[in-house]
Image (cartoon, rainbow, N blue to C red; front, side, top):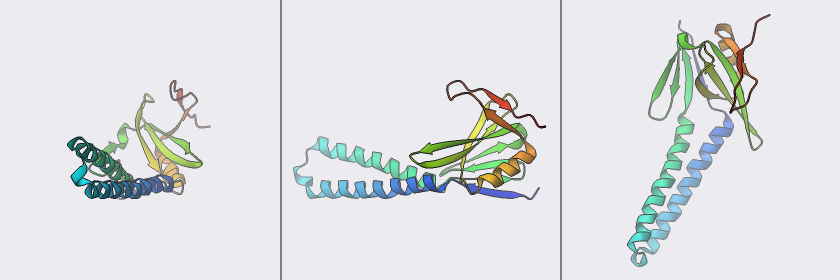
Length: 164
């Protein structure tokens, strides 16, 4: 099968990642500038605090780049989830169903595709852009059964949707 589809995260998450990257970079520059201006009067404890705060801010910036780099693709009989430093492969023979989850963060909806095995245990939750959601759902519906969750996050009640 030579079919390959590539999907990215939606624009609200990419916007969040740019806020993390730019805000973290600005905070890091301000921290380094303040430490450089007052270096001679800073005690050692404040210098070490500044170093640890800078490392913490760098983790946020790296997280922003990780969100920007995230994508997943359907490549033949596997789904490849591409992250910043690794790629995870999900064999489609282990997938029995799929579902859709939409979170609303502020006023921005964020969509995810959930993959389930035959016992309705979650295999993966992968983010997707709303523009790509119909195409991904169509592709998945040709191969797998739809799963709905009528419960809550604490007490899920998943079931396969019966075809009429």
